Amino acid sequence: MALRRQPLSAPRPGDTRPAAQRLAVPLLLLLGLQGAAAAGGPEDSGWLQDAEPSSRLLSQAARAALHFFNFRAASPSALQMLASVLDGRAWVNQKKEYKFDLVFTTEFYSAEEGEKRLGKCSAQVFFRNEKPRPSVNVTCTQLVKKERRQKEDYQLYKLMKQLKSPLNAVSIPDSHGYIAPSLRPIWDLAFLGSSYVMWQKTTPFLHYYMSQISSVKQWKTNDDAIDFDYTVLLHEFSTQEIIPCRIRLVWHPSKPLKVTYHCQERQTPEEASGAEDGSAVAPTGLSNF
Image (cartoon, rainbow, N blue to C red; front, side, top):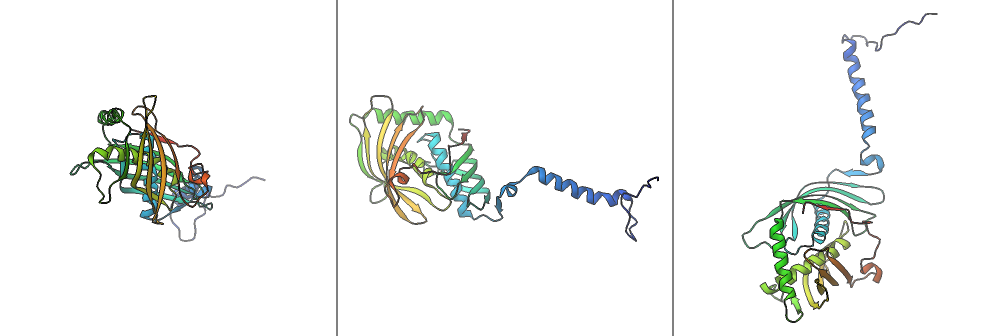
């Protein structure tokens, strides 16, 4: 028996459109569904995008990225602090893991009065199971020129190496909040080392700021590095607690920064020393510095 050809799309009563127009909408819908399946957005793997992430949460992730950036850059002359978050997206899954895509601006931490120097960064930040030490991939531009940064770092290094006796100081800033110009490099080095600690300890809900150096001791070394032992006070937001941390910092302008620490808090000694199973299996990326 011969097969009869059927119309590809039978018109509804009263539908006078050509067959091509009647086919267009279903075909586009089919292609759209196929494209979405191939793309596989975060929702396909259990991630749900937060339609309106809070500015606090985005700032929290941006600060974590900057702490990591400062630590890896290892330059007390080019420390950055958060200016504002320009754009940010956030995802969360059932394990309470958080992912962020961010664009934000930075300010030069030690800018002189009247000097305004803005950088721009993009970052991806991942918190695993609400734990600290997020995984970070960050790229920053428009920062301190490399030649100036290297010159200022070397001047600081030379100053510390030429001290006739190792430095031993307490209470920076003083009770009036004043930091003597001669002690400013010591403060910047402490902030550099604290950046590592603050990155290690930041969670989606807790962030830190170095509020004071309660003591600092410089150790003599047999090599060309500078070795400092700091006790710093970290202000924990949002608990408002002040947490003492002892930080050992070994620094050389042309070498990676070495930091070990122990914080005195209501945790086990293993957790307080930064040995916890954090979000980052290993730090990911830093570029354009």
